[in-house]
Amino acid sequence: MDAKKFLELQGQIKQNNQDYLEFVSELDSWKAELDKKREKSLLNSQQQQQQQQNGSSENLPPVRNSLMKKKYKKKPKSKQETSEQQQQQKKKIAAYDYKAWDKFDVDKACEEVDAAKPASDEEYETDEEWEEERRKQLAESKKAAGNEAFKAGKFEEAVELYTKATQLNPESAVYFSNRAMALLKLERFAAAEADCCSALELDAKIVKAYYRRGQARQKLGKLPDALRDLEEALALEPNNKALQSEVKQLRIDLHPEKYATGEVEPIFDKPVSQRSKKPLVRVPIQEVSSAKSAQVTPVATATSERTAKDESKTVQTEQPVLTAADQSSAQSGVTLPSSSKPPAAQQTQPEPLPTPPETPYQFKSAYRSLGRRDPLAFCTSVLCAVPPDRLPALIGESLESDALLDMAGAFQAGLSADPAIAPRVYQCLRLIADRVRRFATCVAFLSSGELGRLAQLISQLAGLLQPLTAAGDAQYDLTRLAAAYGVPHAV
View 1 (cartoon, rainbow, N blue to C red):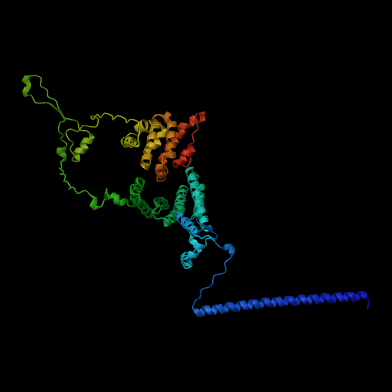
View 2: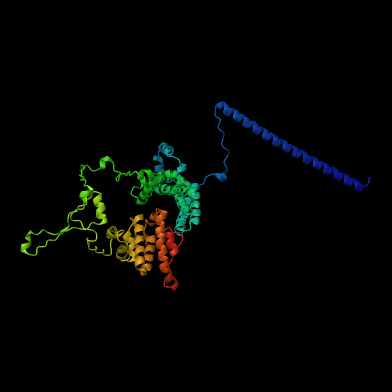
């Protein structure tokens, strides 16, 4: 045989032998794995049978991974705990103090160790608690940014920021209520109603949530439900005048027949125990026929005594001429007192204008006397008579929606009488919006008609300030002012 062929045959035999050994080793390892799996399944079945026999069918929890374990952080100890540890450290006996070791009571020390409680998980703060606190703080920052966007009239951006706040902290009812306010401005009434429902599920005493849900339901045509929401809000804030007017108007819309029949609601809702104990007084009513009522007693008499010889002459009397108002009052059976005069004859002297107020009490007194009776005088002698920086302090924290609308009407009357006060009115309106604390709440409770009155004021102001802005005298940010007063865009 050729030597070359012999060497090739020998190498092939060695290769076949090596392949066989590898195959056998793989077969042995596969068999060992099958035996392990069979033993494991058999052990699990035996454990299940034992659990069923013992009456406990609870599944054992899986082995926890070390990466999923909670990380504990030691809480700072109180002064009392640190003082106790210092006392224990002072009690330690030095190794060289043999006399003290002779007096040491080992049994007592063992009892103290047994009585000491081990440190529980309550003494530690987990990473989950830190993460929850961080999410709450981030949600508050999103809510604050949403409030700023809402004040600037960016309602879409406000909705997005409030949504992020609700995702970070879904247990806060304020975030849902604020988002409902922005959705109302965008006329998404169904979504606003859902947000108010979510807010009330978390906190059933949020007045704004009841009020905003009532507004949304009015737009959706759910008037009975809207009335119930507004009544709930009024029960929580009985002195809110805006809510009182809304509830009254909605009751008229729901039950027009009740008010058409002449039924009058009670003025006071006081219980019987708090009502006055004074007896009622009966007022007699005297009916006068139409024939007698037409005869009005003379108001003035003029005697003409020319000479002493004409004493026998009759006294000439002047009969007053009956006006249409007097005839109608006579036909209705009402007699005017003898001292009453026609309105033209009554000459009343005008009341003196108040001095510029210096305290909030003087401002309120001037508002009560002139706020609605004479808006022009209230504007000139009160609102424009004090420095604009002092006006927010005089208004104070008791601003109501009615007072805000009355001031807007006074500013309108002042601008119509004297257009030159337009820069001062702009400065007053801007400072009221920036510095009066209850301003945002008052604007939020205004109806669409009341917001229209504010829009008229800002439109009038924009028309008067436009020439000044074009001339470069000053810059007036009317868009920001309109957004602060609930008007989306400056006209």
